Image 1 (cartoon, rainbow, N blue to C red):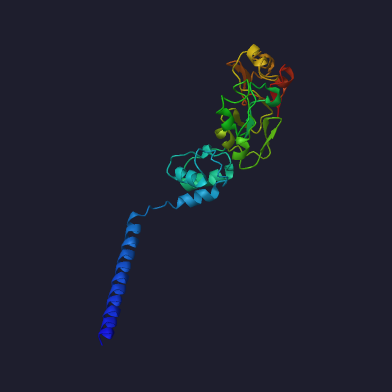
Image 2 (spheres, helix red, strand yellow; image 1 turned 180 degrees about the vertical axis):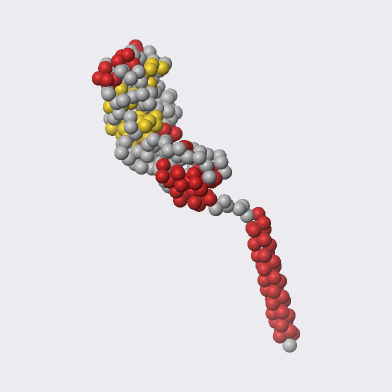
Length: 271
């Protein structure tokens, strides 16, 4: 008799506990939904529309983590359309319409590595370790005597979303046909020797050193010695010497390649 009464009490208590837990769960569920709606961040519908028009490379060349962050920044007015080189002018024009902003088409661009050294640039020590350029640069600036030399570790190649970069003879080479000009490689190069230039360009300076001639010759076989012959012989006056280094003004350059023929160090290369 007492056993049956005890079992009846336990069952009743269990039912009460279940009911209380269920009621609490419902209450907390309602509170969670209410709080989530109150605290929800309203997303601008234009973000998805803008993102759909972006190239989708997620390269980071624009300075943001990916296309989603870049689209959000565009909508908020914290970024410019010209920050992205991977997106076509046609899609940029559509984005401009979505955001009701002005748009002017830009010329296609691509990246070049302003170094022709590689195996022709002398080493100051034998480097053993992680071949990544950043790791190499952290070891006394890298193994090359020239502090502006390409380290050939492939950091830029790893960051290229188009797989348009190759390493040959310890030197980085970009593929003009594959390069979208996103700038991811330039942003990730620890030496800062990758430049974005117009795709219409026919020549580029494959050197970044500002050192004087004698010092350059002791470090590299093909480094610019600042002789100025390219500038003196350019029929369009498209080349100037800045800090012992030839600089090309692509708005004036006609691609005659006179500079390539006159450079005694072969520092100016034909594309």
